[in-house]
Amino acid sequence: MSGVECVDALTSAGFSLTARTGADVTLTKGLRVVVVPDVPMLTPDELMAILRSAGVPYSEFLDLLSEAPTDPAISRTRLSPSVAPR
Image (cartoon, rainbow, N blue to C red):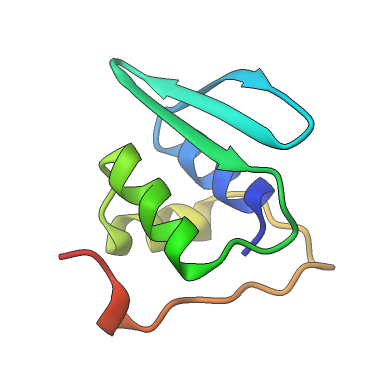
C-alpha cells in the first residue's frame, strides 16, 4: 500500500492533514499526531508503526481502506493477520 492510500484511509477515520513535506504527510486527530511517509509502498513495519501512532486497530484500518478512494494503478498489499496488532 502507498503512503497516499494510508493517508486517505486515516482521513476517513477523522484525521486531518496538517502538514506536507517532500517526504512525509502529517495528520492529526485530537492529541494524536501521525507521520506517514510519502512513498509508493509502505513496509509492513512502517504500516504497523503508523497504526500504533494513530490508535487504529488493523481490522478497522482494513475497513477504512475499503471506504477510501484508491488509485487503480497501485496494487494494494495486505499484511497477513499474524502481523496485525492485537
